[in-house]
Amino acid sequence: MQFDTLITNANIATMSETFGYTKDTPYGAIHGGVVGIKDGKIAFVGTMDELGTATADKIIDAKQGWLTPALIDCHTHVVYGGNRSNEFEMRLNGVDYKDIAKQGGGILSTVKATRQADFDELYELSLPRFKSLVSQGVGTIEIKSGYGLDLDNERKMLKVAKKLGDDFGITVKKTYLALHALPPEYQGRADEYVKQACEWLKVLHDERLVDAVDAFCESIAFDAHQVGRLFEVAKSLGLPVKLHAEQMSDMGGAGLVAEFDGLSADHIEYLSTDSIVKMAKHGTVGVLLPTAFYVLKETKLPPIDAMRQHGVKMAVSTDCNPGTSPSTSLLLALNMACTLFGLTPEEALAGTTIHASKALGLQDTKGRLLVGMDADVALWQIDRPADLSYLIGQNRLQGLWVAGRQVGR
Ligand code: NIG
Ligand code: FE
Image 1 (cartoon, rainbow, N blue to C red):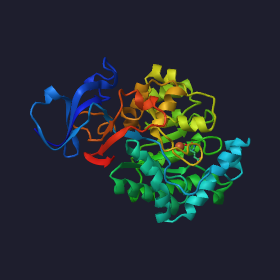
Image 2 (image 1 turned 90 degrees about the vertical axis):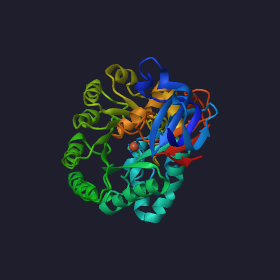
Image 3 (image 1 turned 135 degrees about the vertical axis):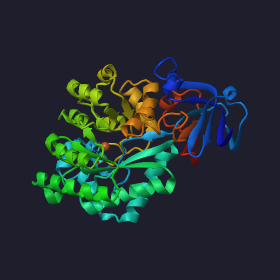
């Protein structure tokens, strides 16, 4: 067989049931394996013996390093203007996140800075964060709007997100998050804002700038009824929904997003059993954001055991944003998901591969190493997959391929 690229002499965490993942083989692992890539897809996964004779334009010796699916960061806000280290300092002087938000800080201070930046400035400001994620093996990134809060600025954010993906050959999924905060010009007129946000969604959808629709369902943001109105519009356009839910209180948001057959409910520290049951029924993924939990010094843990028992799939993401998670390290999120939330390293890796792909509706093409899937592959110089969660502050990435093209290291 003829390949474009062959990666030989590798250990492979396929994360695929075909190779025993979730059955009898942790990580669906293959030792002494090969991955063959052709036309942007995975064309072979197996042992050297199974491969037999083969030729390739490029042969890479993995030197017994580990191959995993390229990581997937399924919840980010990497596109934004400004910086909120001043609020970090305020919080450390005793002011809490909700009070900062009420004083016009928080999300709204980022809205101001994001509106002020023109397209090129916003791109330049977002670029180092984007590159930093990619440098740690991330091949698919979800990027939300939500700091524009008017039609032109939401559009600007989504276009910057698209350009970042196009320029670097990274898969970017663009999410419309106009219901993130109430902009100052709509103070006291939340319902009117929701109505406008629904109209903007139709426009941006027409411009092909929206892959999914998100909102922030919380006492300091929008209630379940308002979110439901937006979701109805998303549904009528055939767009999938997801939700910032149960981050600071139980607003029933996770149950709501599940009832819309939503992709994911994210944060979910205050998730109820009722909502877990609905998420399980509708296949809605629970997205864990341990860095935000850590930054806010939250003490309420997401109900990991209950999600396990009900078979809710769990993803792990950076939530990269200027307020609650100024981090561009998905590897750190893996470590935190284990140490703070008690995930196993295998669950954490699944949370940034197979389950993160489901959280983006990409489960048929990404998140597993299996013939026919996109050739999104990361090569790591590690002894075993648990090192990805265990090593704090070390980046062992050796190579990153997206759709068969080498995009990193
Ligand atoms: O995911 N929860 C709402 N949105 C972000 C925070 C945004 C911000 O503080 O700028 C989050 O935590
Ligand atoms: Fe978020």
